[in-house]
Image 1 (tube, rainbow, N blue to C red):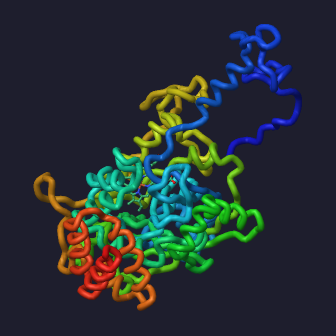
Image 2 (tube, rainbow, N blue to C red; image 1 turned 90 degrees about the horizontal axis):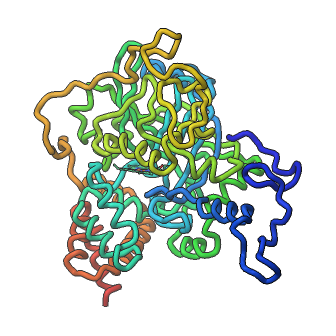
Image 3 (tube, rainbow, N blue to C red; image 1 turned 90 degrees about the vertical axis):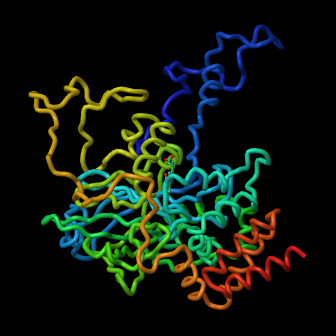
Length: 489
Ligand code: HEM
């Protein structure tokens, strides 16, 4: 958080500190006359106002954040050497930004949409960011499809609105989305608040221990507040009455000392088991079954401090899946690999080359030390110190210790499809999820999906969409077809 600045002591001033005599009347050329270019108070004020916005996030534009504490509750040193996980009882400061995905900044919180879960651990070995969602899976499995996918969720270039035609055209042509779409149109698709939902790291990550042994890991954050959701009707009403419902709920609960907590769990797969797991463990459209890799509780996350300035601490906060610490690294998941590039690039565009120096973004439990210098907004923090390495003046030095362990590879480069494992197809887990739902929930799922599909203008897109759900489960497809036909009568 930035240092508090006393804005109450003394007179109003210009940016250069000169006292302002009148903040209500501009300087005119005579009574009733036009304004003067010498009125620097007016010109500076108008110019600053014009530059108040930075580009909003291209996705996840609406969000709310809070600081908190992560506490380790189980010994995981046999899986990772990460220092912040090295001891039961160890506490690490965190900052968590929640978000919705598709709406722009001026939208509403109570939408059917995944919720972002961007968690920064300010560890003594650097900041570790886990940039996940409230869903364990995603719509697609290759980063190269992401911009196309998001274009179908955002405004159509001609109509300026989100179009059912585009959404269902893309989803029906991308059958790997069937699992995540089933999830999204079920009860958990509209959480009642950010406090009443789970979080997931979603991807598979690498953990490596002191001995160099590798494990694959998935993170789960189970809400201790209980899961609470809104129905479509409740959400439609709330989005109109209180567009900031999630943000308000989070801030107010922390203000009254009712700190939300999550139980932190991991699924661990020894690296050697990945090749023969029934599903490709690096395919983001799939979960690992709990019966195969049971969740182990390793910690507690509590949010307990509100940011004081939303622009400085939430709008300018940056999170990157590429921010790792020793003992944690990426997997070959093709979505994660693309994200390792995309976020830093977005930050440089949106917040600038020195975004990492801002109070919310910089390491809190260590220092960033390197030869990077200057650029827009550079604060001169390095004074006259040398800006190159190697140097003979006591500058920072490389460690020779990679953060994560190397991956064994073979074969030729190429535009390969994600390899399928024994039980993989695009529909198997969507069908399982449908059959896990109670009859009531299935009814709501069919109603939610059919309401949206029925808005599509072309029969071929509707047929293709329904065919995907039928491949997941015959009853699912039949019930959906009947419900859509009824609505289109
Ligand atoms: C390859 C696919 C993806 C790409 C290229 C991508 C790209 C982006 C970009 C450019 C941003 C805006 C960052 C900023 O301006 O600071 C963003 C935000 C975000 N993305 Fe992704 N994304 C992808 C997939 C995902 C997935 C799979 C998840 C979750 C599992 C996810 C979760 C988030 C979250 C939580 C944010 C908001 C971060 C914040 O609060 O600042 N994204 N994404």
